[in-house]
Length: 248
Image (cartoon, rainbow, N blue to C red; front, side):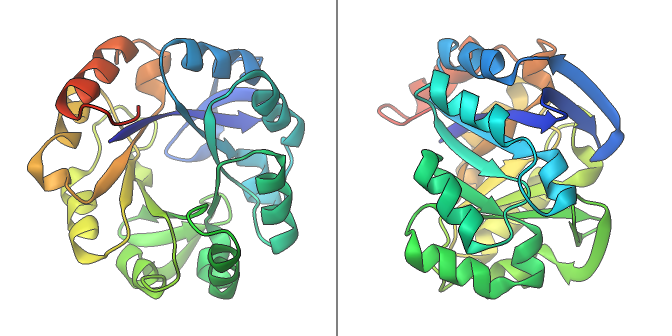
């Protein structure tokens, strides 16, 4: 079970949004590489990075910030935001990103997901972000008519490494992850699921160790880590004690 600390990039800064609203951004670190180092020193082996500006622009915008993170840490990085073509997939994986996340293009260009997953086995995840049960795209600014399950099932045979499922209404709100919806999705597909959106406390980490979480790869923690509601050492110790030998 993996706990992924999140670094969201906006204007070159590490921020957290509320419910995906770019106008409701809180800057937590003006130096994302410094934030990445801090997470690594806290004991996290993985990072979850999102280029928020890139998600809106449809192409990488905060590339230099990501490159600096790759330069200063040995963390395994999964990266999303503005990845809409194979050139971008090739570029990021070639620079040392461990896994890329395709979101908007998974709805609009599912062939890209299949092509990328075939070319880079185990290194392509799909990000599905839902508002009122329907998947949102283009940096969460536009709604589709498709459900998370509709899209996830498209990729059952594509070799996708994980589905990252976010309940937008909870993201950045510290209300706790929508475990019922997350477990329901994980039980309905064969692809491992990563829970995202609203992780609030050690209780959410304990939910990862519940038998119902057997089909989850892990969860993403954001604001709770930044504002101290979730103690990194306590969370990582809990996971390691429950699953000896697994990564954090």
